Length: 122
Image (cartoon, rainbow, N blue to C red; front, top):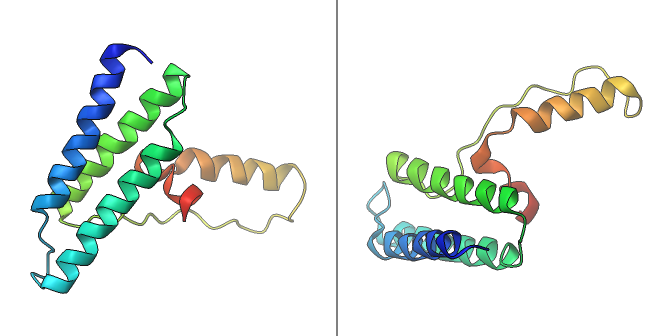
């Protein structure tokens, strides 16, 4: 990891913890606020620890982009959880064969960047 990339990653990590410290839930209830703050902290720790040994610059850039997108979406909508997406259903393909593999590929390509790591840890 280059020093510039390292600084960017550490800056994002600090930014997430600053956001968590100042976070207020959309409902304004204290229990919700505490739960959402804890979620932000746990999610950041889990994902950063999971990706700490990455060395491929493309993967690192993808993780940085995902983190930035999740921060922006969370701040905009005042929801710390990833926004759900409605992907197309699998259709009528059998569980094996070329059509099924093609549909799986399309589903992976249609997944937004901010959900790339969410399914892996949930």
